[in-house]
Image 1 (tube, one colour):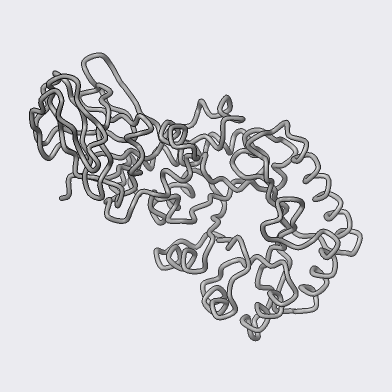
Image 2 (image 1 turned 90 degrees about the vertical axis):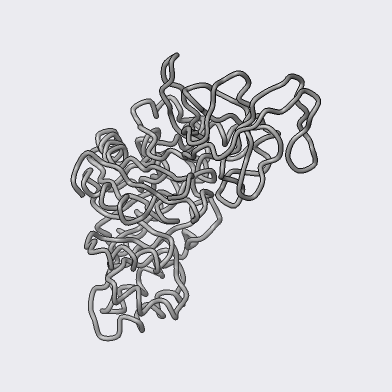
Amino acid sequence: MRWAWAEVDLDAITHNVGVVRERATPARVWAVVKADAYGHGAVPVAKAALAGGADGLCVALVQEGSELRRAGIDAPILVLSEQPPDELGELVADGLTATVYTHDGIDALAIAVDGGIDHPVHLKIDTGMHRVGAQPADAVALADSIALHPQLALGGVFTHLAMADEPPAAANALQLRRFDEVLDALRGAGHRPALVHAANSAAALGIADARRDLVRLGIAMYGIEPGPGVSDLCSDLRPALSLRARVSFVKRVAAGEAISYGLRHTFTTNTLVATVPIGYADGVPRRLFGAGGDVLIHGRRLPIVGVVTMDQLMVDCGDLAVRVGDEVVLIGAQVGAAGTASVPAEEWAARLGTIGYEIVCGIGKRIERRHISSAPR
């Protein structure tokens, strides 16, 4: 076994689903497991989310939904954007719920269904984020087009908020007002979708008016705060992923010596340096050294020294007695003589000027995911 791995606590996934279910009730929860469940492992996470009370799942790609179907998951699965026409046959065959927002997308899906009836589709409305979605003025015509195809059924209408992680922002109220105007127009034209949704994790936690029939639970399901504007609402969430390794080599380095590519770090005292067999090819950013990144060994915070290399990084252990094989925690918690210390994914994000999503999604395929749970799954 390689001395670098990620542990994924499936009980934390189940717990976090329960926390958001309670917060968002009576809205249902659909768990977002795109991008291999944000790097956590799509199939085991999806099963843990459903065990926690999620009613459906969301993915970005047809292939992601098909992987879940091959694993025996029969819950509703929504593909969150229009897909290329040559992938729609697989979407239909696997019983995935399609998203549409163009007439061409609706027509291509109707052809792919080919004789079936009432294949569910959700109509996405662009209320202000301007990524994908139909213009509000086009919503009724698109719903009419869906209704003209007996192969299709309007199962839902949704939008996405651009500033949900800042709940007081005026843009949220504006987008929801535009969304309500679209819903009123659709109902006036005789369209009554079964599901209406607008809330991602941040809105599920912090914007009551966005919860509607269901919330799309993404990053909060993994125990990572959606943004600083809702950090005060995340105290009950439990991080699911930890990134761990073992010391592969130790050496004494004298004061005045430098280390790693470019010799950018020079030691001011004699010290013990540990090499850890994980690097930027595994998702540890090369620049984490310059940003002040730490790891945990024996429950103590120790600094990464020198540029992170492709497969390895180095840690200044000072006078700590570190040996080959000792556990290193890069993200997560570790117990030591002074208690429990932790390095959350949000800390990496803050140091690197990014978000927790990018940190966990960036953990590479070379890192084995070890899924742990107290419950049989």
